[in-house]
Image (cartoon, rainbow over all chains, first blue to last red; front, side, top):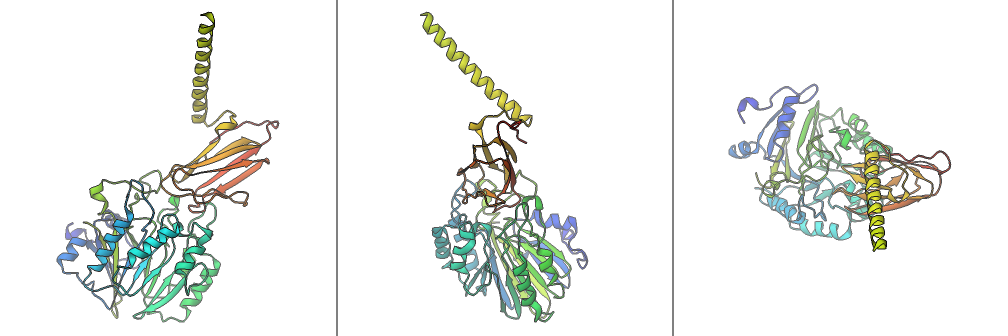
Length: 321
Length: 131
């Protein structure tokens, strides 16, 4: 990657340009590093970031996002998803400093089975961090519309499991967009959750960095495959006045990012199996790749805040580059 | 001896007939029409879609859905008439349609997946078709 190909265009108005977007997509799995400074996204391959000694990822608050561990999946795309989750945890444990917490953005399990949740919990016990926050994916609410997920992970949450918390001056909001889905529709937040969200952010200063995390993307990635949320625009309208909003999602098992005004959208890799790029296959199911390539398409996401600089660093890291 | 030849002939004729029928059914299916055959009414869940997306059947027909994806899916009526549990790869779900009508359904996990079963009484100008 030559320096001239770095994305350094102004993103104040309508977000990242198409060429830059495709460039970012092309790096999916090899690891990419993005820094948002004063509205300009700088993005370059992970190998460069390592050469630069992290290049500014150290911040006052660092946390890790993992997603789509699909415990219980056992078909050809990855016969041992527990092993690759273990490798993701090892990657987290190898960070120079343990993350403040881990966000799991859903599809913990493949089929919502009790033993699959048990396996996930057992694996994550070895992660070096203070706490793990969860939101459900559609695979976690297959039984009784998510009741068993809530029993395990929903303590202190509202409704179907949404909640917020503060860390180091930033406000974190976990949303649920995988229950009560309507025929023909996309992901769905619902009026009760939207009303709660509006109220939740009402008292915050506009300078508060806001991080929203949910399973299905809160921006329309590819509606034909259901990669979007019907009422996400309503949710985002409540966040317009904030100077820095970061939206972290899973579900699509690949890295994608987009900047729109004050909002940075980002999806994470899965720890279990990759999925095809939008429209590049008949459907969005598990994608089989040669065994030696699999670990370059799975990984974790490391996020750091640099307070006072309105800066955010998102570092995607594949299990193997 | 004559009897044996006769029997072989019959078996051959039956084989040819069944082969011919299969070919005909396949031909019709590709043309968007399937002859009425209540025993063969299966909807496949494949590539995140119901195939066929619309199926016409006679009243009393049992329809079976089978999941050919590596993803779990469900088959849920939009009017709560029927609802499967999560179907893992190769799992099946069946429902017998005892009343005529148009029945829409979807996958509650991937709601972009929608399908329709049209149920008609055999005497009412019924002609099964798929598209």
